[in-house]
Image (cartoon, rainbow, N blue to C red; front, side, top):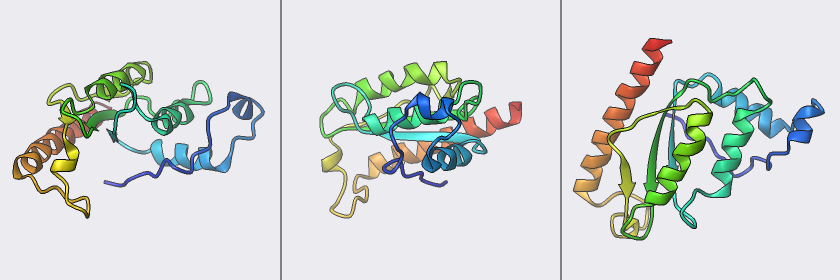
Length: 153
């Protein structure tokens, strides 16, 4: 599994695609996404939604029109928050564009990780054995989902 850094991805502007001169970061990002069998989206929640950088990545990957790099991929979401709801709002809000982009989402199990500060140490390592086991089970289900979707192609 590889992580894709979204922090350097320029904000989407359709005019640049329409002019045939998209930023290099966009073409490189699309080239990374296109061959993937699945994508796991791990997100915090801001104002009951996802961070702008994640929405921007969805937009960049979905364009230009007719060349959606996300099309037909298996997807999963793990949402995290310092509060007790585990970013429930972000998790469900993210599912709306996923349907339009034809990202085939793992429906069960759902992964909402609340009170995240209490389960991580200063290095960002999970200290809660029950959370570690839950995430292992989630990842097992996600890998099986990716394999299932890949086998259907």
